[in-house]
Image 1: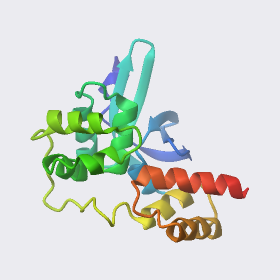
Image 2: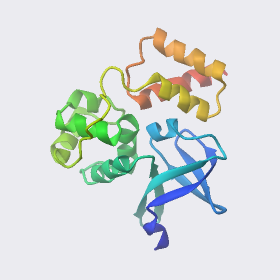
Image 3: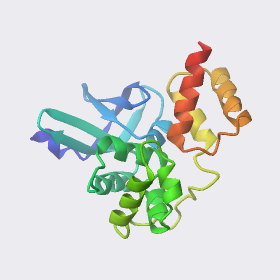
Image 4: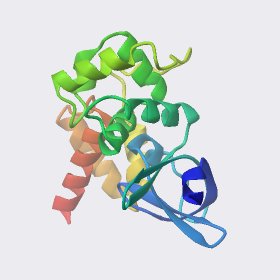
Amino acid sequence: MLLGMIGRLIGKIAEKSHVGVLVDVGGVGYDVAVPLNTLANLPPNGETVTLYIHTHVREDDLRLFGFAAKQDLSAFRTMLGVGGVGPKLALTVIGALSGAQLASVIEQSDVKRLSAIPGIGKKTAERIILELRGKLAVGANAPDPGVDSPSMDALASALKNLGFRPTQVERVIEKIRREKKEHQPFESLLRLALSALQEAR
């Protein structure tokens, strides 16, 4: 199958949502699910983006998953080998931790950090660490996934990419800081922000 050979897409961003992006490649639109850390750094609609692709094929289900970095794609594929971890959960993990950060968390056996990600309980975190230890390359300059991660700047960028006005973004960022929730995983922050913005409408 030709689609199964897709390893990379380079095209213009046609549309964005909170779960993915529609990439126009020579007039063909590819609907690609992306992790939140990739979403946060996407350029505006109409600009060119490069995504490293995993094509997930299951009987009548074919989905594309895209990543800004090769290491994130590699980590995603490695996670799919863990029992009980499907593409949706793996995407959630990579959205909260980059491939380099995930490798660091696993090598440090940081169950608490991993289980803080939505959908990952303590037992699942322990299984991921057990099965992936030594299988992910630890980047020499991997950002520390501790108290300063994820970045509120990345959250602001993601919200602006989704079309929210700067004034709306500033208000919701201030609300999150006021409630002292800024040290939560990126996906949790984005959910909080989107919920607050929806309530404000």
